[in-house]
Amino acid sequence: MKKNTSKIDMFSFIDLFAGIGGIRSGFEAHGGHCVFTSEWNVQSQKTYRANFQDEHEIAGDITEVDARDIPDHDVLLAGFPCQPFSIAGVSKKNALGRPHGFMCATQGTLFFDVARIISAKRPKAFLLENVKNLMSHDKGNTFRVIRSVLEDELGYRVFTRIIDARHFVPQHRERIFIVGFREDTSFCWDDLALPGAQPLIGNILHPGNGSEAAEEPYTSGRLAKVNEKYILTDNLWEYLQKYAEKHRAKGNGFGFGLVGPGDVARTLSARYYKDGSEILVSRGKGRNPRRLTPRECARLMGYPDTFKIPVSDTQAYMQFGNSVAVPVVRAVAKIMVPHVLKIRDQKKTASAKTKPSTVFVSSYAPVGKCVNG
Image 1 (tube, helix red, strand yellow):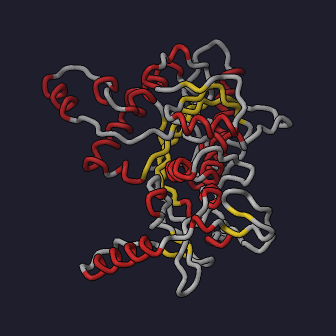
Image 2 (cartoon, one colour; image 1 turned 120 degrees about the vertical axis):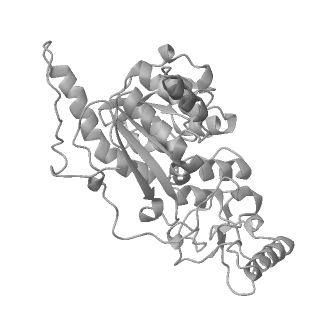
């Protein structure tokens, strides 16, 4: 994804647990410039490099990166993995009256690395993304530790919201977005614009009628028809039907998800490469359904057709299944960036005298009462 060099970079950001650059794409759309990237998976690095041309190298394991080697930046972005947090250690220290901090509460988890970088670099803002279940993990203890670290230990103003990508792309995909600002701001989730017209799966499918150019190995021929390798074999289709029927008889909801052009898909997962069962495209009565092609998966996640897919189908399915829905991040970035710029400009123009705490009001958004999670 080549950068729009005609646009002046308004702010800098770093991209942690970068995957294939979905969160980055959303912030670049609003004038951001990436100054540091970390992603440990070599296949994801391959896709990332194919789509983003940077002067900096991709750092691998973030646990081995010294925060002092990370450039200063305005915004920290991280789609960090969810790992268990030990509450017992913190509770014990409280009982003994011993001090503790985020190093004790989150040591051994990847969130610890996010926290230590925020602590060392003090960015003006951050955006963290995770699965919806982060809030209920370990009976809510995990999220309580995360919020306490960000607010009480690091001193950031934190706003959270669960957003279903269904508003932007034709799949149900609920994710939690954690926004933080170093200073007081008038940031408000009510300013997030959700599209009125919701897309359907037919919007992202290969039409197979010649209206789009063929893209090997996904489509071929004059009509750009979907490659037959994506059609389920008789054995696999029979197995999935029997599996679904067995669970229906038990009153369970397990089974494949069959969609047509007028439907909305289930959540695309990283396991899609195994059998594609969560999203199968109907080919009509009496015909075996097919998997989505990797290009259709890219579209389902909101990536443009210019996004390069230089890896195998298996890797592509895992990468898109682990990705964020780009239009969601773009919408979140839109309401974050004005406040980032306010904080930056305030710092530039502030006098040397100590000032009382100030609430920064964005001229881009209406001012009023707002309750944030």
